[in-house]
Image 1 (tube, rainbow, N blue to C red):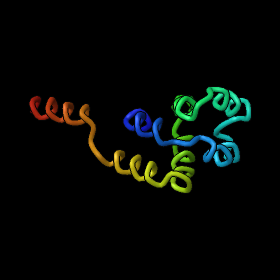
Image 2 (cartoon, rainbow, N blue to C red):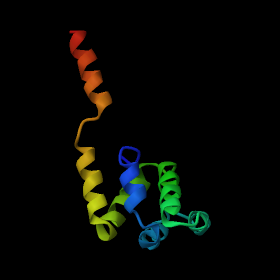
Image 3 (cartoon, one colour):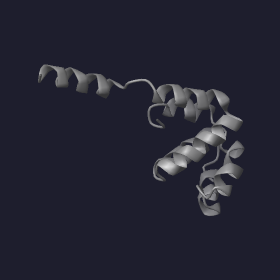
Length: 101
């Protein structure tokens, strides 16, 4: 879901609003947060946070989603909504599956 919504997340996300939650649940280490913070402008920090989260696995995504629900409700809702929508690859897969029957 992060890749699917990367542009909106990168544009609207304020990583500093999420850091306490992500540190508390040990999704980010203090060193990782420092590396994110060192990226400079907010958009670069958001990009680095998203890339870091993508390497963390599904538990990190759940904690990130909880944090978004508290701090960036519109982004939380966007991720939840897009999770329930089929992707282009799902549609293509369905086309190929039906042609094999």
